[in-house]
Image (cartoon, rainbow, N blue to C red; front, side, top):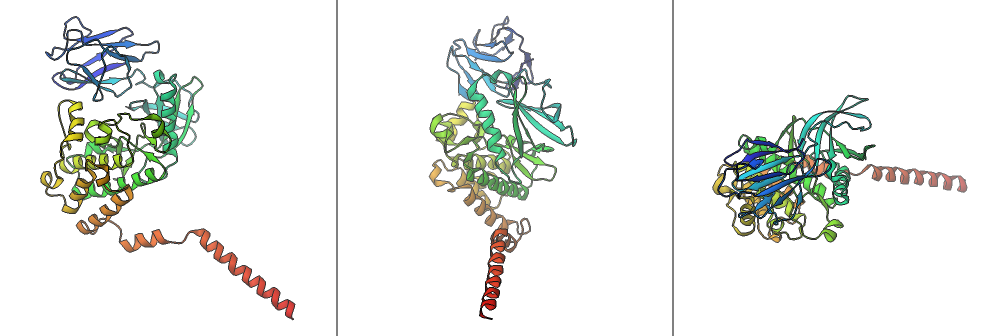
Length: 417
């Protein structure tokens, strides 16, 4: 059953179960979701179920408005909710949990679902086991309310196919995508046992944070070279495995930059604390927005506080667009100056003043880390030797040419004899 949980504000921790009928949220004591807050209207918003148990929200003409994931909700216009959506009403932020947050009875070939791991904007993620090998996996299943909407299905499948093309040690591996016999879309992926980067903030040594910054930049370079923009880089989307290695995950709103960007036009997608200025203002974006978001993520990691903060997500977005960011060296003087300067460059308002691409960011970090923490990375000679090694095809061609030369010489010797 779907529910709402207040995750921030005076009523944090309160939960409301959404039953299969309209639920009114407001200041009046008779409201199903009663919110004793002077900034909330008597009848502020309505949560309306559909035939499949999913809910839409509509602002019924409140005085102070409603926001969804930091975006103002137009009055009297219903908006379909997705698991994980954050709804701001007055001084409280609600998180929506879709009715699919239970183990569904689905036929996913080769796998058995064990338990729920998380809910995202478009689907729920379950822990699963491969029936033949017993190996654990994670399976993301599209919320049933979206299965009939072509745009959402297309984006869900795009996530799986885009991630499946990538092969990188710091990107969560996607195995396959499919559709169950009763029409539910899913994809299977690597199960990372560990935590999120969010859970490490405040306790991660600066040298470990620097190494993870470098590895995430390398992962982004891989994604960008395949034409994929992540668009939602944040600590929650960086998983830390038991080996201490970061892995980039959740390409749920990734965009294939050569196709989808031209067709979709400007859309505000992302997470306010880590959103680039161009993203926050709804402009078309490039891979440079990921560089900004990665910089904002590691500013938070190094400084143990977000780049910008405010009670209202909309105000955070405005700060990204208008306010000059603080220098990391002023907030976290213990971070080596060269690394702090790299974070600052990632956070330039003008994309043209950031690093030109993720490869340049990675190379700058490599140089800065070798100087600040000489024993942290492999020696440059070993890296250069590995990168410049001839591919196997080169040696095959050399061997074939040598063999051909021997055969021709032998043939010529026989003729002249």
